[in-house]
Length: 122
Image (cartoon, rainbow, N blue to C red; front, side):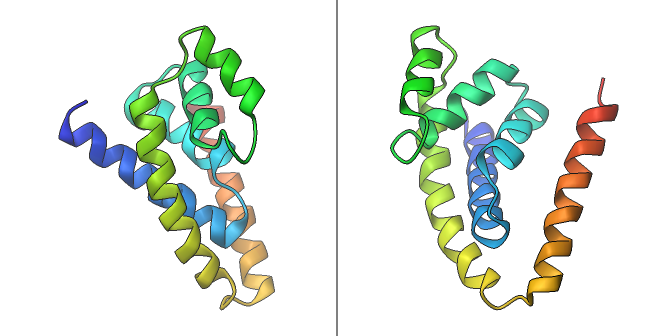
């Protein structure tokens, strides 16, 4: 894995962690689309990698199925996990300072933006 790819994965991990802490979303909403759109992962590779990243808290058996079929990039999953952990901490600190109404609106905007990007992407 080259430095540029590692850097992109680190940024995806920190963004996923921050948004997870702030908005309560991360793995499926942020990390999977980012791996597909920014790094060209297949949907299966992105899903498997994200599941391995979160293997202890959720999805251990599902992640194992992806791993058995060869749909996991272990280096990416571990790098994502480290930065997701850090981002989640700071995102949660930020979220506790944001008014509830603004937080709800931010959540909706992020979901809509991702939905539009995925809907209209070829």
